[in-house]
Image 1 (cartoon, rainbow, N blue to C red):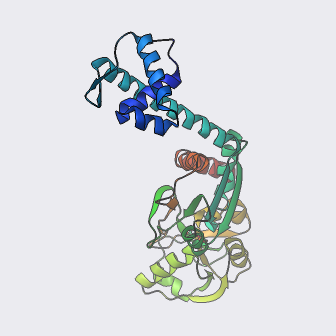
Image 2: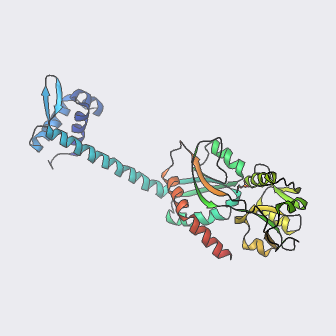
Length: 307
Ligand code: PGA
């Protein structure tokens, strides 16, 4: 048996599966005499008949059946091995295209650093945009993975929540409500408000909460980014609602505080998402798993560094 070659086993497996030398020869692009010769040599090596011919039909003997199962096992393992090798190659020199909402701007570089250390050959492109921008790229299948705070309603996606994204009311530290506890949401009615641009998920969540509680704020300024909003709060344009992840120590130093308003924080999540029918590359699925496993630890470390 040990003198038999992998090629002979492949020929045998094909004949056994198709129960025909003619069809096996076709599938393997060999001549019929070559296939018959390989089976003959294999039978001699093993020392017992593998097939019996009754009329024109070919049947496996009990030993042939046993060898057939063994071959299936061998070829299955070999193809899994080949897949693993391809995967390792992919992780050595793969590419990863990510797009994420603006609130992840501080978190994502911190998540990517340890991933890059683990897989130094992987090239990463990260695009940061607002909710609508992410949705548009997702519906055009432009990237490997998408990070978003609201599950898209009209697209069929695979997703996993990986970290909370609470939205809080941010004000300058000399604001009259700073330090007050349990401020009724209706009090925001009188406040000058800085709103994110249309298409922002933060804006949509804020507008929904205000609508639910019949609060209409005076929008004094509309700005297209969390950083610009923090600057505007700092110089006294008004208050706003931002992801807590964007209110870093540096923001606190520049004179911003979180107000304790009823119904806040707006509880949201970050989700890692991709189109349900997309076959993820090995790099993308490795990052998908990495983010789910490591995100909490990365966020905790980030907070420690900030405080
Ligand atoms: P965005 O971020 O406001 O930039 O769209 C989305 C979110 O965090 O919900």
